[in-house]
Length: 268
Image (cartoon, rainbow, N blue to C red; front, top):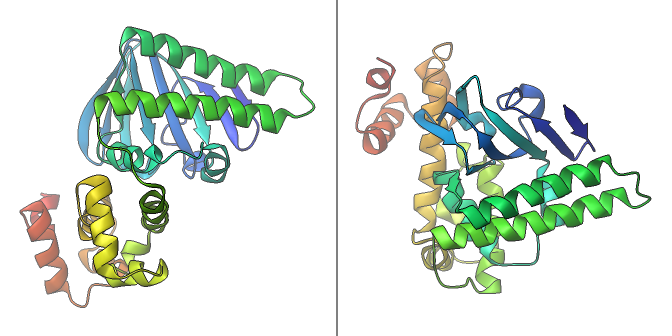
């Protein structure tokens, strides 16, 4: 069953997890029962009861295989609604980066109860006949996001991110999530757009995430290249051109450096 507010959609099950129609939505999954095998940027992982999964780049998910007794709720939210509903809290930047690498969170019993309540609250607000429905749904999502921050902070403890650094990193992340790395892989491009020096952007990135800006540019790039290499309908030249590599040889060296193998060998 599906409840739709355009910006927020609740679905029981994972039928639309790889749906093209919802590809621009960020998905939040809570598993009640059973298991579900899937691939996340080509690597096999398994959802189990008590797991929460948050995926922003939906194209990284493929080959979804739920068990016969699998029960889960998916909440799909547009990025714009997430931005509007996200609390003014600096932790979201680190959480977004860590979840990009590993979208799974294993919740403890207390967290599972809280997550279930949050999911029910979002669903109930979507069903409710309320004169300020958009606002109450946003508030329900905000409470859910704050608990996600808390869950994730337990799994990945770290110092609080200063507001200025968090704001800069959020702008950097937004550029990466929209795909700027396809044509621009120089730190200077992002620094100029954000009105800071490349050195400062890299220093802030290192402090916030443990990695410099160049690491994240290349990480986003190689993950997308891996996804495209698995699509055999695309030639290596098409993929190289799509990422604005100056030559096929440069493209091959880049893939060799980060994947440890050539583009053609990766496909074998």
